[in-house]
Structures are given as structure tokens and as C-alpha cells.
Image 1 (spheres, helix red, strand yellow):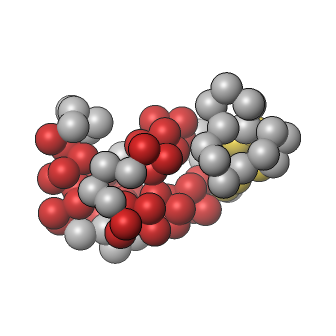
Image 2 (cartoon, one colour):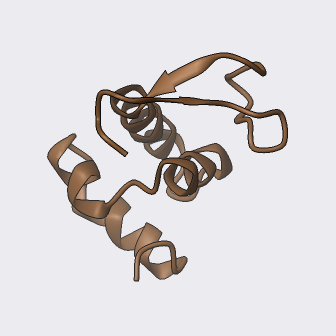
Amino acid sequence: MKKSQKTRIRSLTSPWMLQEGQSLSRNQAIAQVQDQLALSDVHPQALRLIELFNIEPEELSEAGLSYESLKALERHALFI
């Protein structure tokens, strides 16, 4: 998926901050993940967005996510 593309959210995979039919760009999703992981190392909504957008650890690192947060995600087998 290109960074400029947006993903249309379906109700089954919809994170709590979105309603059905709304769209979220990849950059917005990365920002949401970063905000949520600041609250908790394994925030469930952040994990859903990472899986939904197939976000790579390099992208999160470039966005400013701490090394410790990336390692916490790795421990939960999100990044292999």
C-alpha cells in the first residue's frame, strides 16, 4: 500500500477511534500508534492499527517511537 493511499475501515476491524466508513491515511495511523504506545507498551488499538496497515518497525522508528517501545512490540511477536 502506498503511503498516500487511505484504507476504508470496516466495522469488524475498526479501531475505537474510527467509525465505519471513515478513512485513515497510513501517516495518520502511524501517528495514532505512536500516541497510543506512549500510554501503554502494548496498547490493543495500536496493535490493531499496526496489523491493519502492516506497519513496519522502521516506519515507527522514523516517526520517533522509542527503542524500548519497539522492543516491547517485538516481545509480543508483532514484528518477526
